[in-house]
Figure 1 (cartoon, rainbow, N blue to C red):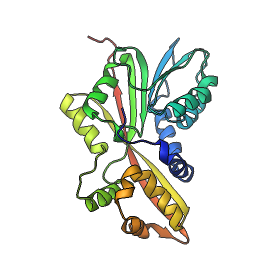
Figure 2: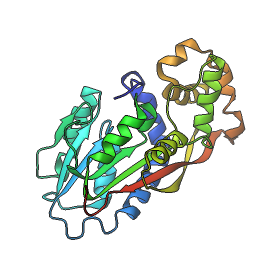
Figure 3: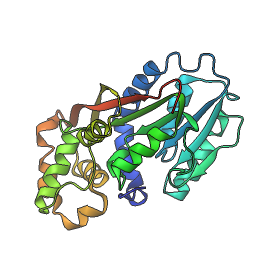
Figure 4: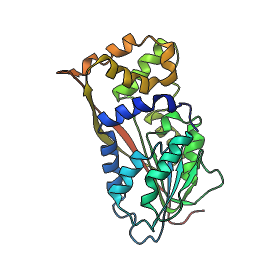
Length: 258
């Protein structure tokens, strides 16, 4: 599934999540999209692709507050201890056993009512195949919700700067790649934006936490000094403040599938 190992940068990712309003913004967008989704449904089969430790999904499920006997969850996460932590964290939201997988279930077509992929598709090895599998896993009246940042996001621009320093193209996908795949596949979608802020006390170590989160194992090939200076334009009164956005895609499956 993944071409980036989040294990070594867990604390740096946690720092980002603590100091960004991204999760709050994403949940609000999803909840708005799912206003009437549970109406008339005796069961909601949820596939969470790239659940991490389950913190985001916990916030998502808490806000939706669907009855535990209705929600059935399948979690996909390649890092075993994160997958286990997510299953424990989310157990209270369903009376049914939680299915935990380390990759997409290839033989589970038309099985899910809702597929969620929140800021995960950057790191998949085969974006076209992954999007195809997720779309094919939707049952009648199913919905696929995903979030991913594009080129206008300053953090994505940091990727661009860093990998240019290495003489390489960015090895990850961004929103524009998702949109290109969906258009090429002829998959109808709706696109919207969710706005958020990243704000933290401006110290070199805190800047490094963001850089490590973004570059992971690639940082050992880089001199981070230039990357640290790329954050200078966002310095505001002893803080770094970045106001930016992510793209949200909604894909609906038809009432009757072929």
